[in-house]
Length: 266
Length: 280
Image (cartoon, rainbow over all chains, first blue to last red; front, side):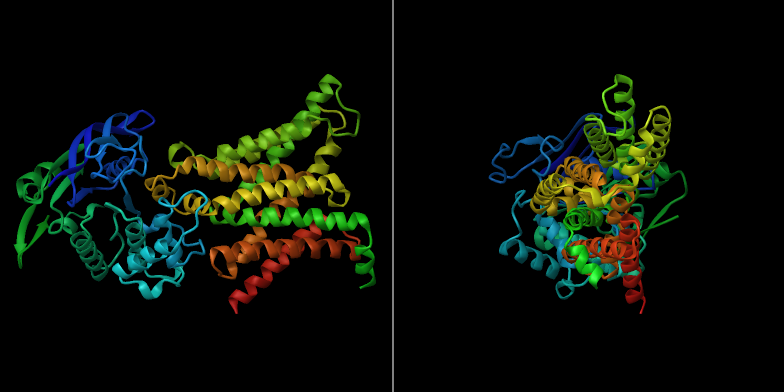
C-alpha cells in the first residue's frame, strides 16, 4: 500500500501552545485508518491538520497526488497540505451536531456543496455536478429524499447526507469525525457498513475518528490511539491486545473473539 | 384611501418609499445570513459602532472648530464607515481561533461603543441632536442624491452576493468542509461581513439604527418560519422587508405617527402572522 498522507515530525497546537508533539505516521492510499481517543485527546486537532485547516506549529503534513491528477503539483511528489488547500480532495464528514438545522437547505442542496470546491467562483452547478450529486445520494441510499429538508431527517439520514456530500466532491479521502456519535446500535452498524462498502466499491481512503474503540476493532486496518498525551500507532492486530491497551489506558483490558469478531472488554 | 393617494402625490414621500424600499431589500436579504449564523446582535452592535463614529467625528471637529453648529461634519460619514467596517471584519474572524466566542465580542463592542458614544456626546457641544437623529433616523428627509447613493450600494452588494452566493452560504453553513475543499473560509467570511458592515454604515444614515436592526432580523425570521428553500427564504425576506417599509410609511402618514417605529411594528406584525400560520 503506497502512502498517501504523511505526518512528518508534526507538532500541533493552538496559539503556540503544543497539544500534540512530534507526530510521525503515514496513511496509506485506500486504507481504513482509525483515530481513537477520549474527548480532548487531540483527535479533532489531528483531523484539522489533516484537512489543512490547522497549520502545524512545526513539521509538515504532506500528501501525494497520483500522476496526472494535478497540473500544478509534481506527479508522485510530496506537497504541503496547508500550502495547497484542496489539492488532495478530502471529503470531510463533520459531527452532524456541528451543523445548524436552522438552515433551510434540502438534502440535494447540501450534497451539492460537495461540488463547490470544483466549481469556479462565478460558475453555477451544471449537468455533471447534478449527476454526481444524484449518484452520491444513490450510493448512500437517499436518492428518494433529495428534495427533503435536512432538518427533517433522522440522525442516521443526516449522517448519510454528509457522507453523500463528501462523495460528491469526488474525494480521495473520506474523513469522518465521530459519525456514529449519539446513534443507536442499528444506526451505528448501518453507517459503519456503509463506509466499509464505499471504501471497497470506490477505493477511497477512510480516516475514521471516534472515541469508541470497539467501533473500529473489526473495521480499521490500522489504529492511532491517543490517550493523555501519549500516542500508539500500529495495525489493529498490534494495537488491540491486552498488553498494549492496559499500558495505554492503565486499566485491566481483555480482547476477546466472538463469532470471529474482536471485542474489547474492560 | 384619499390620504394614501395624497401620500403618493408627494415627492418627498415617494423618495421616502424608494429609499426605505432599498434599505429594506438590502438589510432583509443580508438578515437571512445574520439570522442563520445566529448573530442577530451584529446589526445592533454595528449600529452602535456607527453612532460612535459620528459622535467621535463631532467631538474631533468640535475640537478643531471644523463644523457649524447643528450640521454633521465632513468627517462623520467616513469615520462611521471606517469604524463600522472595522468592527464587521472583527466579528467575521473564525470563533475557534479566538479566546472569546463571537457573541461575547459582539456584546463587548455593543456595550463599549454605546458607552463611548454617550461619553463623547457629553463632552461635545451640540452633538446630542445629531446622534439622536442617527439612532432613530429620519426617513422623510432623504434626498435624490441619497437615493442614488443607496442604489449604487444596492448594486454593489447585490452584485457581490449574486456572484458569490454559494461561497457565502457554504462558509456560513460548514466552514471546515469549505476549507477542506480549498475555499478560503476566512476571506469569504470577511467579505460577507464587509458587505454587512458597508450596508449598515450607509443605511443607518437613512433609516436609523432601530429600523436597520429590525430589517436585519424580522423579515429573515418571518421568511424562515415559512419553511421554503434557501433562495425562497431570501426572496420572501426581501418581499416582507419591502412590504413592511411601504406599510409602515403608509400607516405613519395616515395616522400621523413616527415612520421608523411604524415600519418596525408592521415588520413585527408580519412576523406574528407568519408565526400564527406556522402554529395552525
